[in-house]
Image (cartoon, rainbow, N blue to C red):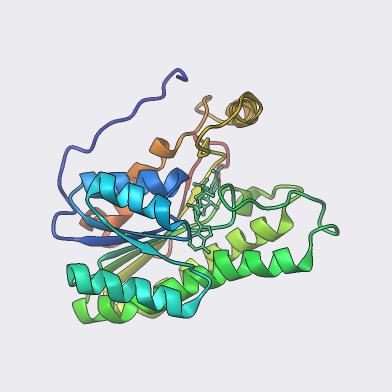
Length: 260
Ligand SMILES: NC(=O)c1ccc[n+]([C@@H]2O[C@H](COP(=O)([O-])OP(=O)(O)OC[C@H]3O[C@@H](n4cnc5c(N)ncnc54)[C@H](O)[C@@H]3O)[C@@H](O)[C@H]2O)c1
């Protein structure tokens, strides 16, 4: 355990009566978001490419698993329909699904990345976020209430050599967040973004990977490794009424590496 690393359990049920969808909630950081939103009282839908992982998390937190490919419009529309059928409303959408670790990306110089992988990266990370917003916003408009939380990356702000397709997609999320916030503010829907730093999200990480993640500690004001639990408070905040007058913002949660 790193020095200073701790997990504080939520002390309130401030999301009681709320319904939250977490895309990519079957693994890694998305699983931690789903757990925290459930602890805070929300009914949680795990919309995940890996259907059995979604089932496991849903069973643990008492949520609903919906096997979903966010890049595919019928699949995403089904996600929203199933959430509504089961819970009757949709208050929170966390656009966390991405090509990253569970569905891995190539790390290569800009001129060696396969164009097909570039296209799939944009389809999942960007179009997937857009499609999920399109699927839930009609219901949020009916409710005149909604909280959309997009997941970018601190690499979008500072750059990161050797995965230009990923970083480009995550930079797009920041502009997407600002623009959508402008378009749906009149409906009382907030759209915000979280940019995590390098986080040990992998299940069964080997020593080399732990070392790689630990190396980021030296670049931070708070000099320790980042874990999924370090990110859940920001999601809980943007999902709750405590952030009702905040929209279009990107919050970097990286222990103070990227100070902007
Ligand atoms: N771990 C980090 O260092 C880090 C840093 C910055 C940002 N992020 C972002 O945080 C989010 C979570 O990342 P993670 O580290 O937990 O990685 P991860 O790969 O474990 O999580 C992504 C999840 O999305 C799912 N997924 C992939 N393609 C999908 C699709 N087409 N439809 C539905 N689900 C799909 C995966 O199965 C997985 O559960 C991602 O958006 C990632 O870009 C991670």
